[in-house]
Image (cartoon, rainbow, N blue to C red; front, side):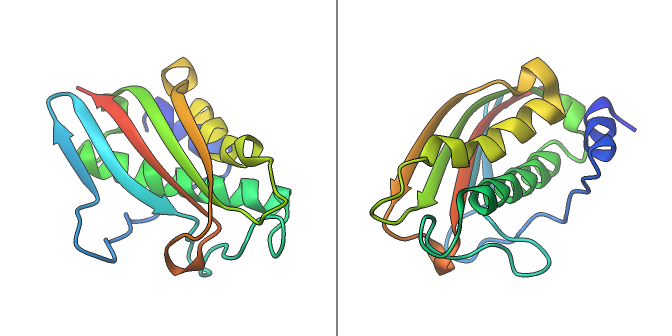
Length: 153
């Protein structure tokens, strides 16, 4: 078992099969040593976390939603690396989108759910640049969506 898998296992996390695209795009594109991973929503086997953050979804649940996005990103990274997450050299950037209500401003704290997971999985290689944006709507009413750029070997 790889170091990354050990880190995830120690936290009680199991990666799902990568989620298939719901529209006309691919889950990831590799250009040189960079993998651009399409946005992953707050989906899990139970249907995920949906709704407007600050209205139907509280901060704690929204942070968990971002963590689900992170888990789905890791599943896509694993697929992009032919099953070997040790090939990830660095998580370069995350872009976080939160379906936020008009009075909700804790967007960065929500996206920390995904950021924290990258550091848990990869250590210092998981520290990344980031955007955290509140948006009016997300696909299929999911609470959070996060995309990534990752350097691989």
